Length: 166
Image 1 (tube, rainbow, N blue to C red):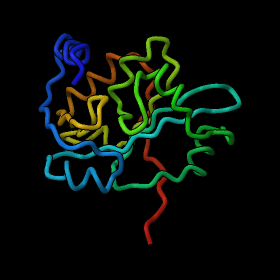
Image 2: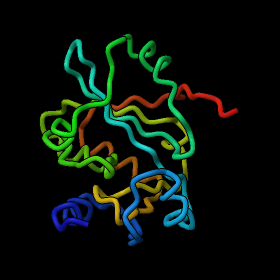
Image 3: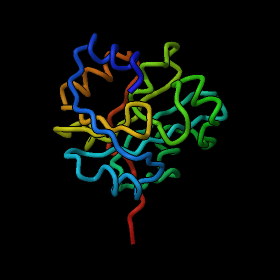
Image 4: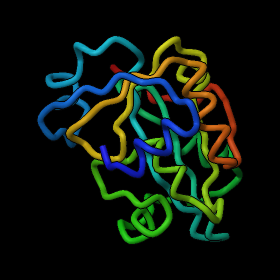
């Protein structure tokens, strides 16, 4: 974990357990190397509305697949696409493969709307990368909520639309 993130977490009284592991880039890799860590594991998507330039960080359970067509209807934005790596780096200070809600602490201009699935928001423990894909943080619910609230981002807690697995 980057020392500045560790400092921020400590200053904001965010409790967590840190687990180090091999770099993971996909959910199947994460299941192998991080699946033993108790809690709801997150999948994160960073999207951009091409029409108005707004950014969305979406956090859902790792084993779910977002129904992007339905999400576009929810936000009334048919032109949502995955954001460019340059946007991810300049806004959240992250690189592909390490997208995490913790990146919101770097969005000082509050360009990002945070959409979180209600099952994540209500989980007793949330597991996500600390902005690097060789570590996982296990964060208790009250600390996760404090973390998100301390970023002062716009947050929307909803039941996300998913594609049903066949």
